[in-house]
Image (spheres, rainbow, N blue to C red):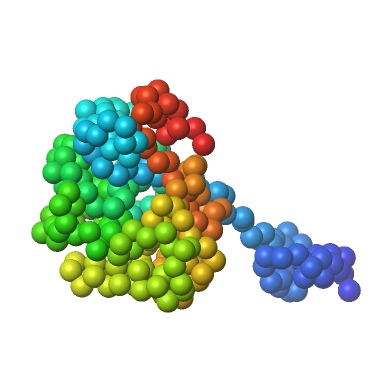
Amino acid sequence: MGIRRKLVMAIALLCAGIVGCAPMNLNATASSVSFIAAKPKHEIAIPVLSYHSIGVEPGNTYVLPPDVFLRQMDDLAAQHYTPLTLEQFMSILEHKQAPPLKPVLLTFDDGYANNAEVALPILKRHGFPATLFLSTGAVGQPGYVSWKQVQELAAAGWDIMPHGMTHPHLPQLSIDKQREEIKESRHLIEQQLGHRADVFAYPYGEYNEATKKILKDAGFRYGFTTQEGWASSDQSPLELKRLVVHAEEDFKTWIRRLAKR
């Protein structure tokens, strides 16, 4: 056996013990021998801003004054951030799409009427999409969106996803009640808008193992928490982090949280 063939066979044997190594052609010459190592996927992290009501209610940390919201959106535009649709966000996190230089996901929880009346015109000014996690049981109640407004948001490029029926503390409910809250809110959105609603945000950011199992069994792709931090491809898909925006937070703090993990 020639020296070249012995060398090829030796490399083939070595390759057999390496994960991700390409099959060897024993008839190849030494000069053509190569093998391909599997490349690990790098972590992708994206800031996800979590808003609630856009209005004026001193003392309520979840009600952000409109002028503050406007300043924040103007700054995103000035700093060349690219707000994402939910589908873009998921594709980037799954390594199916290259991220823009400065991606961000804008989310709103609950479904306050001022999301449509105040936030939407501001976002339209910049062409920004957003995601609304809707408490479907509140639709049509005073202070909350109507289904007509929900449809207007969807037509403007907002993604509408479930946030439970009654905004409950899910871990305090039985498994059957949790399942009802989650599946019924999803069903109503899909019925009203005609698209899949398979991403969930936990009311109060609360969940337990039973909650996650319900989501997984029902085919939900992602679940958003209120745990502080950027969402990352290294996190559990059903435990993505967000940056909850508070009314008492000064502008510099908001910028720092947005720009630094």
